[in-house]
Image (tube, rainbow, N blue to C red):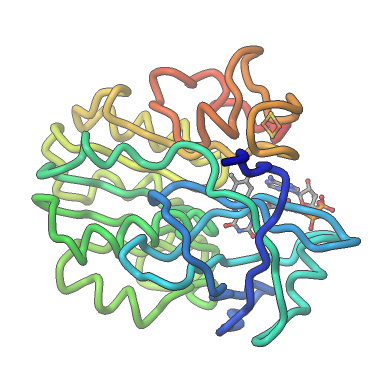
Length: 266
Ligand SMILES: Cc1cc2nc3c(=O)[nH]c(=O)nc-3n(C[C@H](O)[C@H](O)[C@H](O)COP(=O)(O)OP(=O)(O)OC[C@H]3O[C@@H](n4cnc5c(N)ncnc54)[C@H](O)[C@@H]3O)c2cc1C
Ligand code: FES
């Protein structure tokens, strides 16, 4: 049987979409896709271009996958203009997901900044569905209460998880999400997943380590400019040796400390 070409996209029909404030849109794409939370797909729009995007729905939801897109430039603007019934082609899934086996039965802490909630949502929904962790704490930092995505789902999650929502302005807890780590019930033996803007990583890791968590138990998702998504073009190389698309985007913090501390995005 001939091997399928990893550059050939699959046609996906948009079967549902929801618009959030600040030009973010959630798309549900009809597909039969096996993936792990933390993985991404390349969205391919004929005649326009491609871009990588995290899968935000959990693997147990079958028949589709969801992505959340923020309109920032040429290709995401085109994607943003699409709606239910239109097609969005995809390649993937690509990259490493979150280390599920390492986390099974453990106490887990998730730190999300802004759009970082998108890949973590896939994990949260999966873990709450299968109930295979001992405890789950979610720190979610946003600019303001208006920036909150998945408000209703967060209320659901709060029944099984400790949720600490933090706002740069407005809201009950004001400040940077990294400064609220001290208000959690962390014991020091937890596994941490972190997704968000690069500036969040260093202060958050510092405060996690103050609570006894080791860099080996911290996993971050590093976003870099990507093209091929499969380790051939070299666009996403970090530290001269790691490919964000194939070795990552999820890395153990102890293995990518220098890259995580730089604000570079390729
Ligand atoms: C693994 C991975 C997962 C991602 N997941 C998501 C997601 O779930 N939702 C989402 O909306 N976006 C996500 N992104 C970012 C998304 O790929 C970019 O926003 C997109 O490529 C921009 O394309 P464009 O042509 O619209 O913008 P361009 O015209 O290329 O750029 C417009 C602006 O966006 C910035 N930009 C471009 N690429 C990136 C990037 N990779 N990271 C940060 N800023 C960028 C540029 O610096 C510029 O300021 C992810 C990126 C990676 C690598
Ligand atoms: S995106 Fe081409 S090597 Fe990673």
